[in-house]
Image 1: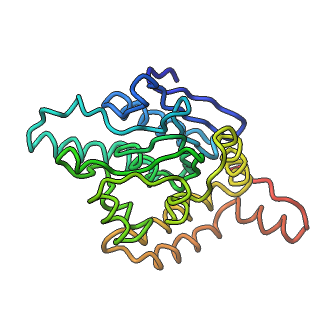
Image 2: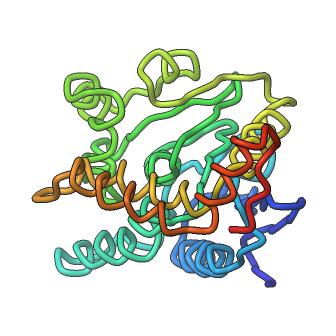
Length: 259
């Protein structure tokens, strides 16, 4: 799978996706968004891929934002379509992916970059990470899910302040807010994140997919997350992974899941 703006590296059951536009601080343009969609779709269909880690090339930026030059002259209609298409093919797509996705946030994660990180299932940040949604300084608002996911992650009041003031927060503040799970030195970011990924990869990918669906259901309007959990819990009993997991437990050995 050859990509112009992405580097793809497989390591056993883990795949590292690196956004590679260092001259633009890895800003998201239309082509990169499409490439990310294509990569995530292909990897999610590959049973050998248990976890995906996404990061940015270099030490300066995860993703410094969207490529403003692409939409500076858009009309109201085009602007709405930009947000709708982006959410559908990438941001919502990642959130609902059955394969776990971890964002390894190095450097700046601003605007669309932070929205990309928030669409991932959780985040690890380097000590030099800076995060924010500065869209109001351009006379626009976040359009790739930022106004929804940020308050879900850090609470309404903090999200209101961040979005309205357009301030950047550092990695420790992001951790205190619950925006990232861990903060580590820059040179340890990928190793640390991969270690978490390998722990996830040892578990049942079938069960993990069901868990992702149930957790996400809590944030969907008109959906009862508890009911989704009940259905998904029950469906696990009909899987080979459940049989292997319970048999291994009773036999006092480690389970070997085939996915």
